[in-house]
Amino acid sequence: MRLKRHVLALALTGLTTPALVWATNGMNMEGYGPIATGMGGASFAYDNGTAAVMNNPATLGLMGKGSRLDVALGFLGPDVTSTHLAPMGMPSIGSGGDAYYMPAIGYVRSDGKLTYGFGLFAQGGMGTEYNTSMDGRPERSELGVGRFILPLAYNVNDALTIGGSLDFVWAMLDMKMVMPIGMMASLITNPGSGTLAGALAGMAGSGYDAARLEFSDGSDFTGKAKGTGFAGKVGLTYKVNPMLTIGAVYHAETSLGDLKTGSTGASMIVSDLNGPNPTQTVPGKITVKDFQWPETYGIGIAVQATPRLMIAADYKRLNWKDVMKNFTMTYSAMGDTVEFALPQNWDDQDIFQIGVSYKATDALTLRAGANLASNPIPDATMHYLFPAIVENHYTAGFGYDFSKNSGLNFSLTYAPEVKQTNSNLSYRVEHSQTNWQLMYSHRF
Image (cartoon, rainbow, N blue to C red; front, side):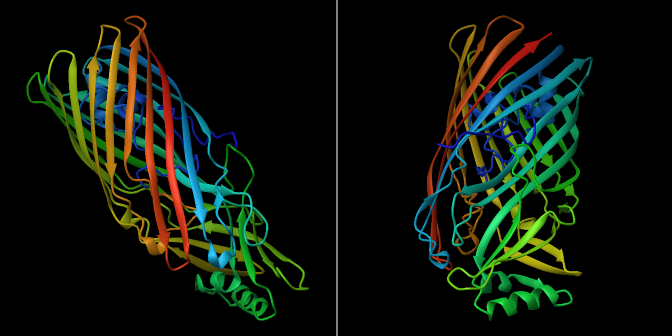
């Protein structure tokens, strides 16, 4: 097993930013914070700690008076294998990206009717790492998105709380991708002046057979192509009676700028795998155009069935279709800019999250849940470098209070293996996950 530390962002849930094979609910995490994740990710209608800044900021108003600090560590353990990559001439190969550790932090304070603070944390991501490919070199992808979040919740009255947040969002991407040169040429949607496109076509006719697009800084902490922007959320909770609370939330689509490398931060590498032609390398600049995180909304309930037993259930909708039609990049070199589009055509994703919490003793709380989701990626566009195909997750966890002011929470998630085949390119991907989160909380 390859052990890799990855901190694309401090995540107040201890979750991950591009742990790079991330991919749970699409690229979104299956849950934020070990309290919510232990309950299948359900989080819209009850107090689940500072992870509320990512789940539903209105639930911060349910915290009670005082301040809370959460410090966490998360682990993502994806297991990905690609098989029968016929066009690449490669046998079955496993991804080496199988262990990622992420720290996290969040702080909120309740003062009168207002609750405010901050969260610094990973939104999600996707990717893989393979140690060889059709040209004998590694292939990899690392896409990560993180947020610095400033939330505010207001208790309108004893029943209604409203909340929202302003989110500073950043995204980082590394990629090493190789394919037959003719396939690379077929992805060109805008040939620019024709210099680069013509060079690719000419080399294909001269015996070159592999084209590689590469931009990677080799760091566990950053990506070669970077972009920043903003987003926001609004939410509410309403206590119908002492037993039932309803919650709802809306996350706006992000407004991220294009992800860019420096002027020579990328390379186009063309190889003749079996002939006498020398490998050709052209340095240039990559721009990933209009990559955004989707609009998200949901509604949930929390039922305090007994003083010790709570049941929570959420419905969440991730509108991937609007933001994942194509993965579009421009490559600038030799005084020309050519545009590539890797088709995605993702579907919107429906997610059902349900969990139970049982207070076994005054100090110990036990949790369990399930996160049931559709796979948003069509067979025809599923790519082995971005296998965000995991569907269902089964979770368990516990909380233990050392005192009135401090406690520990833990969650464990298992996502059963999902297999998907891209029949157009004749390869199959298998992906499962085992993840955990550990969080220490202090109230003062």
